[in-house]
Length: 279
Ligand code: GUN
Image 1 (cartoon, rainbow, N blue to C red):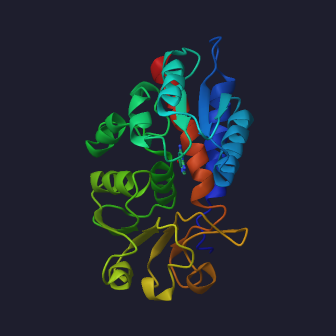
Image 2 (image 1 turned 90 degrees about the vertical axis):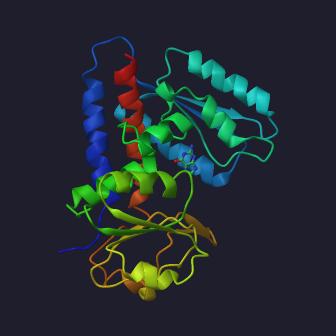
Image 3 (image 1 turned 135 degrees about the horizontal axis):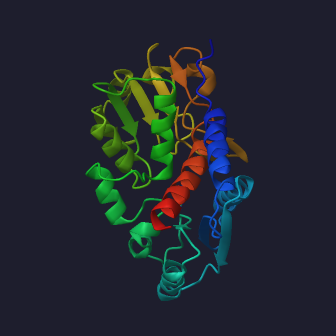
């Protein structure tokens, strides 16, 4: 039996479910996502292409707003306010990273929680911490679904997360705490990182550091979730040295085809949930 957890496979199941639900909508209005990009970051271009393709494939409306790199904070805020008031839009995302003249926290705070498809608004994050929402940031949501799909026990399990970002590490830790996991949040500067990681039942690497995870970080029972999305010499890879640890561990997500497609599916699922709440 393979130890690969295929995000491609599970994301297709989720997307097929969404497509089926959207095809049955009788109301005139279909769910719609607005995607805002500032500038021309090449990784963002690629991610947005996947998001638009995913939306089109399931029959979800989408509006792609690409703004110039040197836009001011107040111009961008005006754009968000317009989308907040646009009753045809169910979910808004502002692709990160943003240029340095823009305060991303302020922008995410402006998005109405009722349209917060990424789950980066402080109210949404607060509700994640309080276990008071079914809208989770898309990448953490995808990781939880992958673990639950494979019936991997969370209650009482030792979960080690490497990476403390607002997008992945912090929300994911809180979701796992609410599911009664024992969570350790590390970063690449954590002392004794290998020793801490080796004791994990579930090791989640969201450090953005290619080949960080080698055989010194794992044991034969480790479940490895690779959230890394690194471009090295034009080659896309995760944080895990897959050829070194892939055959040793209990389960592992590949890159590509692991967490990445789950992020897209869970983002679109969030938009559909917001549509249901707002309609
Ligand atoms: N940049 C990297 N990941 C994400 C994400 O999930 N959402 C947004 N908006 N930007 C990102």
